[in-house]
Image 1 (cartoon, protein in one colour):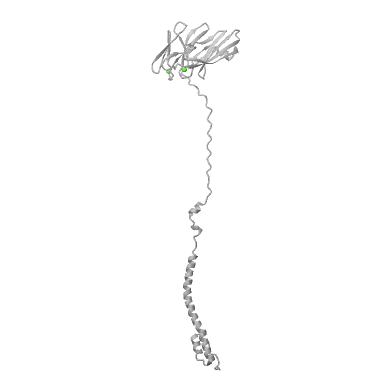
Image 2: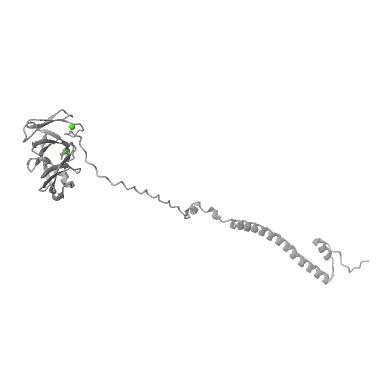
Length: 292
Ligand SMILES: [Ca+2]
Ligand SMILES: [Ca+2]
């Protein structure tokens, strides 16, 4: 049932197709064969060129891929940033709250330092009472600490040995002064102080003469003195004509060396019973006391 003009079955082999085309005769057949060859040779050449191109391209692609992979190498991530830069980030610094300084407690108002009060009969100020004696025309002190005896002359108006009235620290230097009665009147006696200067016993002077401090008085006059805590000696003299109104002279002395130097002197008018009048009849200095 086949005819001579029927086309041969298509073959998958390109060579078989060439063999089928080659036996054709005639110009048309030759041309067709030539066209077939010229059509297929390029395919063969193209195929070889494709393979060669592939051989060339593949390494290039591989190289490109390599380069691309190199190029695509991930840049250092921010995590690679040196930690120093991180730590350089300013952070909030907690400023320590200054601890408030304790407010100094105000010291107590300093109290006036009380001057030392010498012990009675402690003439040299060593804390131990010393032995005081009198004889005609003298007063002596035996110092307990070293056993030494110091003596001073006494110019007494009254006959016989002078009497020791007591001791008191006039200037508050820690050494008591010795009060010796050196005169005795009808209503008034007089005391002369002696002081130990560290080496000798010396009479205390007033106006260049041995001081004579009056003690006591009468209806018309009064004499008294007292040792002040400030280390001064206050001497008061009162006079009255009617026994009611008094004129009181108050003299304050500072013991400087062996001398009583007046520091203040005032005159006041006072009535009987006034403290100024009472002081003119009273003696208060250590163990020396007296008056009405
Ligand atoms: Ca003593
Ligand atoms: Ca003294």
